[in-house]
Image (cartoon, rainbow, N blue to C red):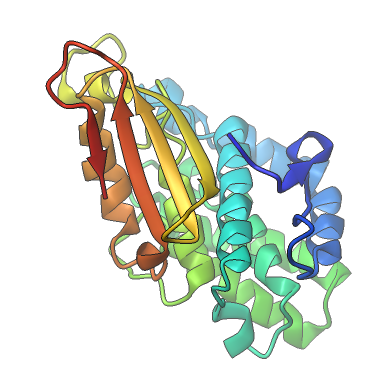
Length: 268
């Protein structure tokens, strides 16, 4: 992924030199939660139901790290493009809290899988709330703790449900979740060894890159080895992008590298 935003092994947030929006707060919090034993345990436990019992794709630590990194990449590109965020602002919070909301929502968005795959965003809410009630008081007074927590929970519930994101922070998390879609990592369930469209299309995506766009702030470039990958783009990514509050700022281009296919390129 082409991304100037993450360093230190992908654990800290580093806006590029073009824009000076603050990052020290999210870096401090990311360092704090990186070795948190409870979060680490949840990231392991939340993979059991979807992977071991349902035969789905990874929903554990690797997925969470990809979503976090891509969410912060999206945030960085949107900010660099002059796009404002409303979640923290409407709560009376600071600009520095915007990436905090995004990062913590990305880290905790799938913990509800420990209960069940079905309706997991709803199960994520009480579990994440308990974790946030332990972590946030280390960085915020009680008022801001509640406000930041509220925005994180909103982003979590909107990541995989009919609930429409009401903030751009939530929209970023929703779209970033869908961007973990390279070969075998699609957010759409697939049957191991199967030959259905979910399986075939999930194997067709070879790379996803986020870049600064020319006509929109964000360009998402998707490389496919087979035209079946279009199903992933249309059924997964487009569905999550619609009504995300950031759809007008993102251009998606999918390129098919297989020479004998009629479909060479699709653009959203």
